[in-house]
Structure formats: C-alpha cells, structure tokens
Amino acid sequence: MVKHRFKRCGRKQRAIYRIVVIDVRSRREGRDLRKVGFYDPINNQTYLNVRAILYFLEKGAQPTGIVYDILRRAEIFKERTSS
Image 1 (tube, rainbow, N blue to C red):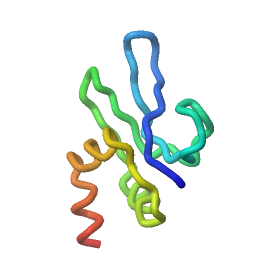
Image 2 (cartoon, rainbow, N blue to C red):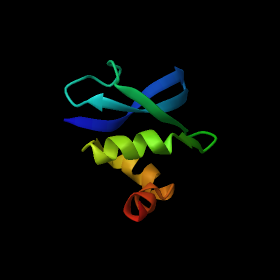
Image 3 (cartoon, rainbow, N blue to C red):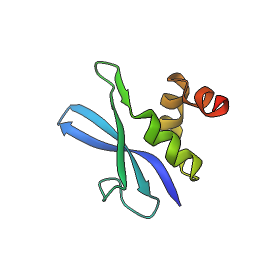
Image 4 (tube, rainbow, N blue to C red):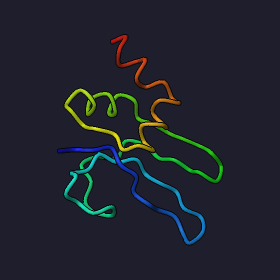
C-alpha cells in the first residue's frame, strides 16, 4: 500500500515537512517514490504538485490524517470530483 506522508526536513526547532508518496512499510525518513509538495508550519506555507497528487490518489494512494487536512484545505478533493 502507498500513502501520502510527511518527511521531516530542516534543522532543529525549524522543521519543514516534505509531502511524499511512500510505501507504508518504509520508515518516515525512508526512500520515497515521489516528492509531491512541502509544508512549512512556522510560516504556514504550502506548495503542492497537484497533478502528481491526483495521479497517485487515482492509483489508490491514501493520505495520512494531517496530509488529508492540508489537501482538503487546498481543495484538492474538489478538483478530483470535477475531473
């Protein structure tokens, strides 16, 4: 099974998270299949590669809880239903 998950980057006390598509059996810092965005909780910035996210969602990838909330705020699921 494949999931959309956070991968922690940045330095100590200044975390930035990459949103990656990764196999469930891999650890958090393991090898990812594809980087599809990032999230900076300090500056509240988000970058999403919408085409890649929609591609993996169509293939059956499941987002984790926090990633699901970010995708919902970005209205990714509205784009998915309208396509």
